[in-house]
Length: 213
Image (cartoon, rainbow, N blue to C red; front, side):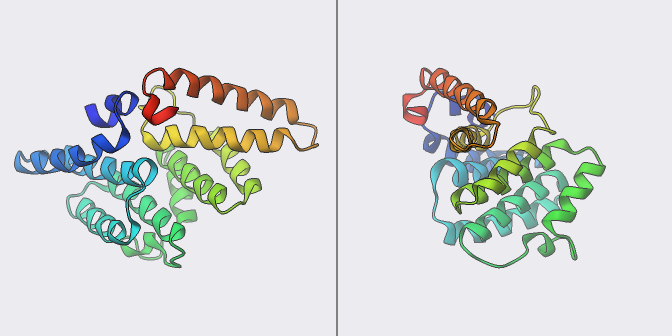
């Protein structure tokens, strides 16, 4: 958890990547299955959002990690790994439903609906983050803005900020300044959001110029 929660604010993202696999091995050897699978999630989350690892090999690993999570009855982290697998599929242009691999008949939409019904806000928030990420990098700024708005219904609160949240905050700034230049009548609101993002990044850069400069 030190590498997932704390070191990302001070050390280069890449420096923490291998530590999560080490933590998985330690957790497995000690019978702490929850911590072991949690670190597989942290590894993949870091690899995709923070380190730009090659997706060809990563996709195979995510499939294996998700399967392992469900075999160990770690359904919560299994869902997060499935969302990351879907993200990887879409970034690679692979037309496949990651959810159906472990949940026959399930889609991202139905996963979101079930999570919303069951008050699993973190899963809803993560799906919004994933969809916003895809929309932004494929140039669909309208959809990216919609996902930003939808995610506001699932606030972070006191939950830990992982690397995906830091990258997502940067994307929020890019979205906000894009719409601040549009004549839609809400320019001031988007500009204020963008200024808040800049303020956050400036504060974070004091902690790690490598990650946030």
